[in-house]
Length: 131
Ligand code: THU
Image (tube, rainbow, N blue to C red; front, top):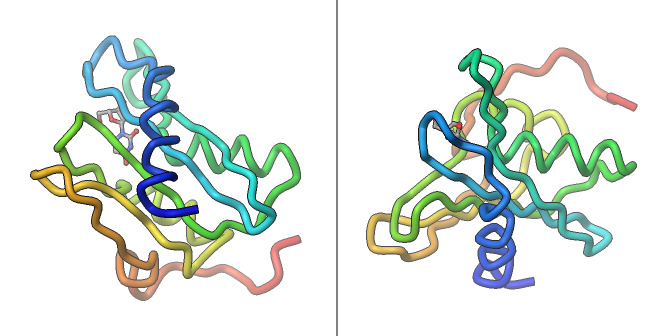
């Protein structure tokens, strides 16, 4: 799947965002090695700190479906507005896919891409072999 195709999935995922407090809807689409695409959206809470980001909701949905092997993730907030994953989401992606491709948009709407390794150098790792 192309970056543009995965980004289109992220746009679809964003329609489900629950963001009544920030009004900042985010969508994520996570591509697995088996070719499945998992959607995620941000889910906010009246107790703000309990909010979950779109990227983490996609990862947790995929893992709960037995998928651990991730190839790429696309993230979108408002059109033409960049939304690379926050630091917490980078660390969660690192757990399963240290070299996953990450796609997001720059201010002009162009898709940017980077390996997670470049976005999270010297990541924290507790141990090898998680399963
Ligand atoms: N958010 C995400 O969903 N992903 C990120 O990587 C950064 C932030 C959400 C959390 C919150 O609902 C809103 O964006 C504003 O921070």
